[in-house]
Amino acid sequence: MPRHMVCLAVREGLTSFTQLSEAELKTAAALGCEGQSAMGVAAREAYRKAVFRTDGSGLAALFGGSAPLPKLGNFCPLFTEAARVLRGLMKRDGQLPTKFLCEMLAPALRSYDAADDAMADAADELLAVARRRCDLVTDEQLERLEAANDHAEALSHLLDCVISEHEEQLDAQHDDLQLQALNTQAEELERRVLVLPEQSGVRDE
Image 1 (cartoon, rainbow, N blue to C red):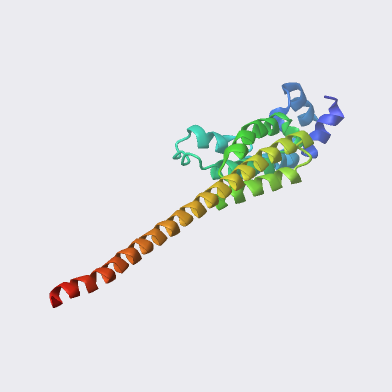
Image 2 (cartoon, one colour):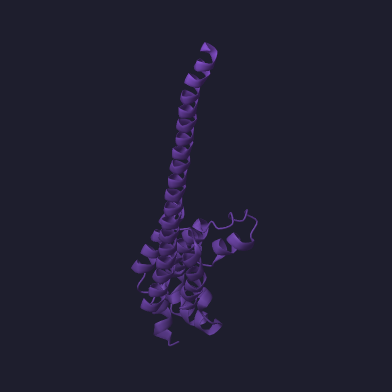
């Protein structure tokens, strides 16, 4: 990297000293770039890493950390953490983090229970963040995430229709059974009414 570009990159926050080679570090020091600029860049990077967990530590904790694993089928922690990371990513992080997130999220968005309000809200928030981060998420990646979410919502709607139809059938069967029971009781009552006069005539004799 040219001498003037090294100092400019550090001052503008385009890179951090951890990303510079030894020769570039010496150039930055010689040009007086370390001082407050270096401290500011380091502070911003430390804040970004701590708040947004852009190093993936929060995601790793969901699958193998000391914290309890989420309940099977509960994608809320994954959606929430992925949205957090996506908010904090920057172009200088490269395309790999965003690609990794999309590869991980597409199957989850396709298979979560969209009838669960909490998970549906978390998925909606995640997609809203992805739409806002058009500087990182490509149109193709966004379409893939939205298509996966549409599949989950369509499946949830289909299941709701099946359950509703089944409940209507059960209600109809219940009504039929009640009607049959009433008819049986009516027939029994009618039979008893017809028998009573006959028994009365026998006693009279």
